[in-house]
Amino acid sequence: MRQLLWVWMLLMAFAFVNDRCHCCLQEERSGLLEIKAWFIHAGAGSYMLPGWDKEDLNCCNWVWVSCDSTTNRVIELHLSFGNSGALEKDLYLNASLFLPFKELESLDLRWNQLVGGLKNQGFQALASGLRKLKILHLSYNKFNDSILSSLSGFSTLESLDLSGNSFTGTVGLTGLRKLAVLYLDSIDFKENILLESLGGLPSLKTLYAIESKFEGKHFGKGQ
Ligand SMILES: *[C@@H]1O[C@H](CO)[C@@H](O)[C@H](O)[C@H]1NC(C)=O
Ligand SMILES: *[C@@H]1O[C@H](CO)[C@@H](O)[C@H](O)[C@H]1NC(C)=O
Image (tube, rainbow, N blue to C red; front, side, top):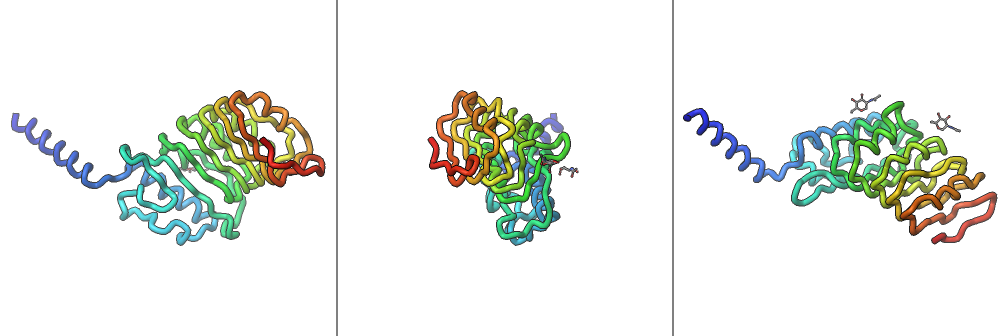
């Protein structure tokens, strides 16, 4: 009986501490520190992630991170470090870095010199791990047509930005059944397979293709 009392008191103490702290999940906090290490290894300066520090237990307050206000789970990540020329080498996406963030709704990876995914750790793995993702920004990286087929598993995605990559239009998009908004700005199309595939996306309402060319012809702002 006395043992039970102890257990109960301990549980209450934990609940109290947890409630006071408004901490983010330990697993998500260490996940963010691994992402930081990955970008620093790629050449990003640690000053680009100010305050991402293991001493600060509430990663919901960290810059570029947003959490749900009731669950304290990370729901948005904005990670974009190559714009200033900081990243020294081409990067291959490692999906494992993002799998702790099960509640993630919005992921921004623009301007990161990404060329593709690691073997078995690319977008297919990311899509099967992030089952709540609605917004994905992959613009201004160095992706080519070969990644497009690996995006088909993002069945919850509503907005996708693929602008400013090295696509030529030889591979179509499939499987994105909730996708409503697609950005294909600043792309030099040589083939029309990608554009024709858009007719098969059942929820697509808006297409942007600003500054894109098709065989030398400029698009206007497409709708
Ligand atoms: C991918 O990221 C995970 C988690 O940080 C790490 O354990 C693994 O070594 C990485 N894989 C490669 C090939 O870098
Ligand atoms: C596309 O990019 C990947 C990753 O860098 C590369 O292995 C592949 O050869 C490229 N494909 C083409 C057609 O350029």
